[in-house]
Image: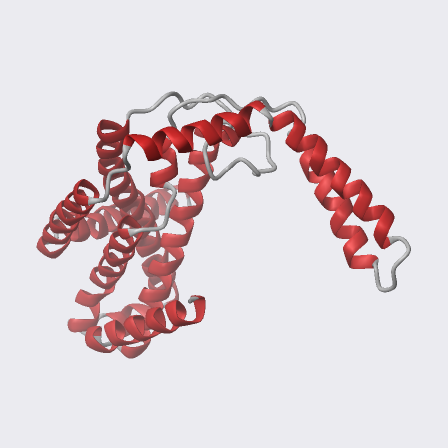
Length: 276
């Protein structure tokens, strides 16, 4: 039994490496990654640079907010307490009362937080939705398609799925390969963006509260910037893996890359229309 399990593990390891090589050495992936990264770099380079007056005004506002963070928390608590007093005498007040209590309780967690004034534009820019996210989406779609396209073209997918062990190994190996390559794609794409933004804007430090960053002033969790960024990229990685799994599911059902692209484009367009 021990040798059988060891042999199975070795076989799975070999299969995962084979799946990874299929993606890493794919000419389409290499060309796509290089071209999209160049487009992203050019886009960020040509992006409108703020004037000194705009930067000075934004910095002054942010410094004022940071200096008055304690007063802001006191006001949140007072507003929540006043809201609780008001809704106690109104009808159908359960939701409002519960919401007011939750707000006060949530900000209790950051009562000892002391934001630090500094240059955090890199964090502001890297957490904004933009071209980098679209590039990552295109990359993971292509990765997912490559993972199953060869089996579909050779007619091997149905054969592998017909066997219980084959089906399980197939799913596990492709999910592992997808998760690893998605992580690599995130590191490369966002690593390049981080370096470019760092050169362009500079950066203060990571070991300060996330509330120090403009746009995160009202964040109600006691967290350092580096902690937030780890969670941010972990969530992004999970989201990317889910997208990849959905794409693999679609192409496994329709068994046609063109139709799969069409379904993805239509669903993406509908999602954007609903969002807007």
